[in-house]
Length: 124
Image 1 (spheres, rainbow, N blue to C red):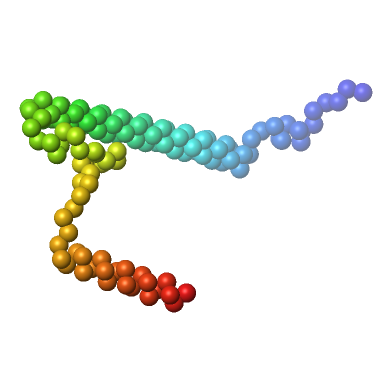
Image 2 (tube, rainbow, N blue to C red):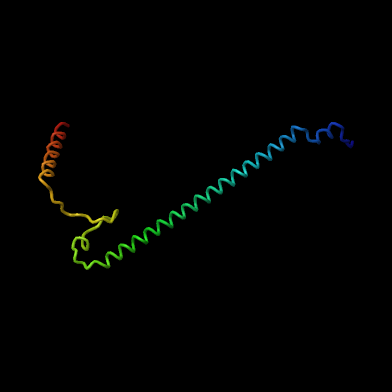
C-alpha cells in the first residue's frame, strides 16, 4: 500500500503567483522593519552623542565658573566683611542679606497687608 504522488500533489508543490507575491511582500515588509530599526538606532546614537556633547560643555562651564570664583576669592583681601562671612543660599549660591532697610512706603504696605489679613480671617 505504497502511495504514489498524484498529479494534484505535484501542482500544490509549485508556488503560485499569489504565493510569490506573498513572499515578495514579506521580504519587503522585513526590509522596511529592518530599515526602521536602523533609523531608530541611528537616531538614538545621535541623541546620545548630543547629550554627551551637552554634558561636556556643561562641565566646561562649571570649570570656567569655578576658576573665576577661585580667582576672585584669591584676589580678595578679606577686607569686605559682607562677602567673606555672609551666609549663602544652597541653591543659587547668592549671599543672603539678613537685614533690609525698609522705607516708609514698605512699612505702610505691610500694615495694610496685615489689616487685610485680619479682615479676611474674620470673615471665616
